[in-house]
Image 1: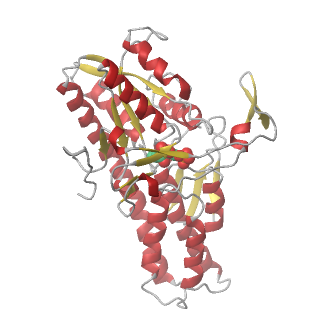
Image 2: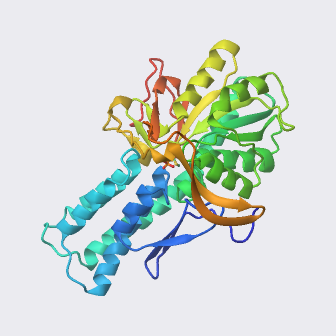
Image 3: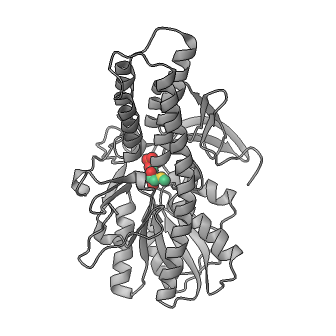
Length: 403
Ligand code: MRU
């Protein structure tokens, strides 16, 4: 890697032909396959089945699917559609994944656009133009904001290391996939890693400290870290070593005692994660396993003065000021089979064969499979958004996310 066929573009929207395609993330990293999304129903299935995933990406695909669906209806002349019909399609699409707030925010914004018309009003070119403008703006803003998040995260890292007079190489742990594949491009948590690697290490003359190594967690049960984050890090030639989710404490302890793991011994100074919903008090829903990373950082900070910063990176579209705290977040529960089976292609040397399912648990057992957990704000050191100033707790331990 990288090779010509590989790409980090999760969403392709053709503004001339009004066609939407998504990179099928269920077959990455073994195959690069785009699939068409022509209706909101197609989007519903692609989002629910995780062919596209990541809070910002599903919001953008949801919004673009409304555009293509509306366009196709207008083109075909096959029966007229009312505002009420479109609103009920939006209400269905919102249900595809409940935890990430970005999808609901985007589709509610489109519903608000529709609210300017009576329910019986026909969806015409004027309505279409408004939806189109909204969706394109959502995509453009997300991309621009991700680059800002990357730079703001880098500034946070530099300030934080300077304030403790840290020098030398350091490592970062991350979880799930928060890169180009989960967004319009560049990424959030992975965007900070990308910006730090390219700017701190390569563009600046700052050699006081540098990002030496990244440890992506495998991210059971869906393995977004193993399949997608490693694919992105390899594509960008950022040095990394994959670990299982249950190796984090051992990794931090080993590196803090200068144990050399595959030639690397740089201490972990940051755990950087994305977010699916950050509520008013700063509690953050993100991929299952995130909470335990924050707990681990807190343990090493309390007992060994490790000064590991636990950072959440997300655009402000992920902030939900209407929910007071983490108890109000609905956590998606996914099918039991995601824990009891593994799905993937048969690998025979460099040959990628048929996709098969293998069993990895006792048949017929009870399984709990929440897709996300909630990290309490007390364990979060900073929330990095497109706003230049990182959100940090005030003296009473509160975040002021409305500013
Ligand atoms: O279940 P997923 O793969 O959609 O979960 C994704 C995550 O939890 C990401 O960390 C989050 O959406 C942020 S993506 C920039």
